[in-house]
Amino acid sequence: MPAADEPSVPLDKQRCGFAALIGAPNAGKSTLVNALVGAKVAIVTHKVQTTRATVRGIVMAEDAQIILVDTPGIFDPKRRLDRAMVRTAWTHAYDADRICLLIDAKRGIDEANAKILEDLTSVRQPKTLVLTKVDLVDPPRLLELAQAANDVTRFEDTYMISAQTGDGVDDLARHLARSVSAGPWLYPEDQISDIPMRQLAAEITREQLTLRLHDELPYSATVETETWKTLRNGSVRIEQAIFVERDGQKKIVLGEKGKTIRSISMSARHEIAKLVGAPVHLFLFVKVRPRWTDDPERYREMGLDFHR
Image 1 (tube, rainbow, N blue to C red):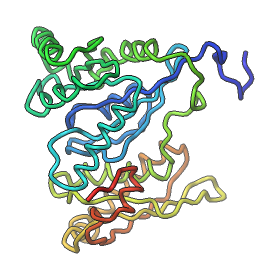
Image 2 (cartoon, helix red, strand yellow):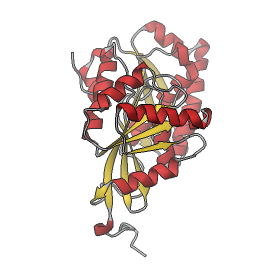
Image 3 (cartoon, rainbow, N blue to C red):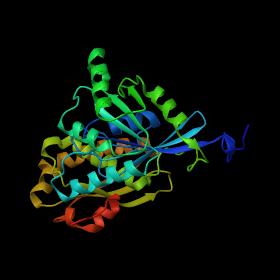
Image 4 (cartoon, rainbow, N blue to C red):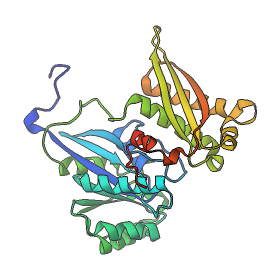
């Protein structure tokens, strides 16, 4: 038995590598990351472009450590924030050891996916095609879709998965583990993400904000953890700010007599408590920060490049 602070696999047997998950919005990237990691490290909603900053989930499979890079959805950007997110997705694709293109099997090869497939032809990294949500599509259609994608861009492998049911997830994990190169692990083997806890807690609150308001939610809303304090009894006191750009948006987030913000706080507190493994006291404040999407500092905090 190795000592508690020693890895379970000898250094000369370890393998490690980065796999970038790319795809159109709502292709299921974040859901797959959570399924592979076995814990919630990326937020998931039905709203497109939920993922803004790059999220890294760490998977241990066989003797390998796989760093999954969950990227923002790739689409035709119109706003500065959109452009920054799409640039980030492609940057991490080029930097990774392997690229996994996720295509929603039910959606098929629409205009957005066709453009991504075309752009991938010039990318030299090994590529794996991952058809997601396959539980919603008949098998013959899946085979046609896989062939159509490979007709545009040559993939080394194709996997058909359902992150919701778990079908195919373990097979994909084993494939990624065997595809990475020999090399030392970059993180402790019990670490599941490189995201600071403060940032992940803020993302969880943004997830609940999105789920609660959905169509009413202003696209430009964001959340930041302002204070984090562990109390003597082991509980955690967290203060977070929800930033919007206009007073009218603030009223939407607060809701009538504060009902909406209380509902968001309750749900987020429950999720964050599961994450930290301790009781959480969460205090949310809605603040107006005009034109924050034009502020370079906000982009740096999200790990995005600011370009005019």
